Length: 226
Image (cartoon, rainbow, N blue to C red; front, side):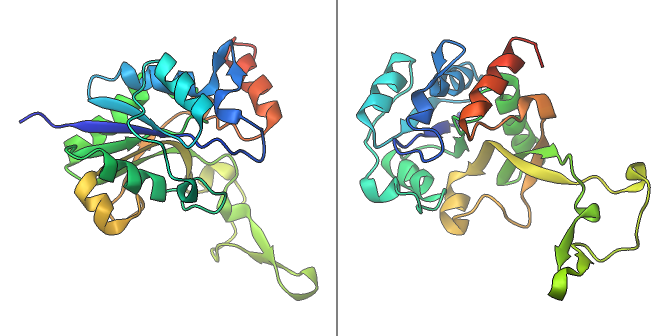
């Protein structure tokens, strides 16, 4: 039996940092189009859908070849809605898939090869969860919190290491790809579990668009100026 993968691109209409962010033009295409096109080229993904509460996003998603089989309820598109809630809603609305692949539209530099690489990693290791990460540019071993009167306290209580090359590597989520077995995600309601495996991506493909200037920076990266 063929393993079925459902790609879910969550894209609500409201955006505080950049109004209408998900359909704002980036290099002459709506931001969300870059993710739709990458997903549709995957050799594993069976169906690519967009979960949205917005009619304009609905129209753009359809234009670029994604399916929009339902409109997301307003209570799942609020500022304080947990990120996994729309995904759980999507897999309820679209049954019959073995895995869900969540692709945030704010990661336009993520490639089809990255998507397939994360899927292959979860299949090869026979695990239930995989998330994309990037090596942290700032080491947590050199970070501090403040105690009373502003006295510095190391965030991680370890012997002081002076040379950067002697520090352990640290990684952070880049928000580009989340893969999970559908039935396991229903149980955990979280992609981060004790057995979640990482798919490492390079910094140049881990760019996440959050504020207005990110559009300009990302476009320059696409053109090879950065």
